[in-house]
Structures are given as structure tokens and as C-alpha cells.
Figure 1 (cartoon, rainbow, N blue to C red):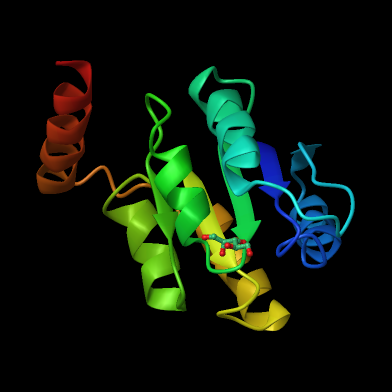
Figure 2 (cartoon, protein in one colour):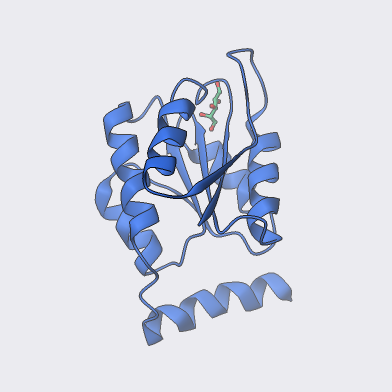
Length: 147
Ligand code: RB5
């Protein structure tokens, strides 16, 4: 798969390790930055990654900020994006299986690197369930978005 990744200054230090893991899992990474610890604005990266996924330049996205929350709020403004801010393994798996989430948002201030790497691994390894009840609910979100 092609995986779009973005981080702000708070997520910058985790990004190289996350990129390494994604590549070790056999995927291609499109890195939208940031590329330094200089203070920057998380919505810029959320929109870049969200648009890459929305326009099918990438299959899935990963965003890293302090908490994952700001990134998810911003990425969810991009049409077609289902971004999930998660802080544990159960949510990393469930958001793929139940929500067909296409962008994972994680936080460097909420979880240690080892946990974040495991969340990314789970997210990328877990397919959408295609369950009838889940598909109905995901379609409800898509239809609302298109109204
Ligand atoms: C940056 O200080 C911080 O606000 C940002 O990384 C993120 O946690 C926002 O949700």
C-alpha cells in the first residue's frame, strides 16, 4: 500500500521511526513533513495527508501530533476522510474493522513511541470487516457528508 504520513513539531521526533516501520511492513511512504522541530501548524499536515488519501494518491494516512486530536479534527474536514485519534490497541483495530478509518492519528504526548508503533502496525494490518451493520453506518456518514 501507499501510506501518506504527516506530523507537526510535536510529532516530528516519532515520524522517522514510524516511517521505518511502515517501510519494514512492505509499504511505500509519502512523507508530507514536517522536517524539523520548528513550531508549525498541525492542520496543514492533516489537510495534505487527508487530500492524498481522498484523491487516492495514498491508500491510508498516518498523522502524528501531540495528542492526535487536532490532526483528527482537521483531517475529518477533508471529504472522504474518516480519521481516528486513538490511544490504545483496541481502538487501533476497531477503527479499521468497524469504521473503515482511512487515517490514523496518534500522539507523542499521550503514548510512548513503542505503543504508537504498535498502533500503526495494527492499523495497517487490520482490514475493514465489511460487516453489513458497519457498512450501513459508514454509508450513513458518507451520505451525510454528501448532502
Ligand atoms: C502542538 O503544541 C499541539 O497543540 C499539537 O501537536 C496537537 O496536540 C494538537 O492537537
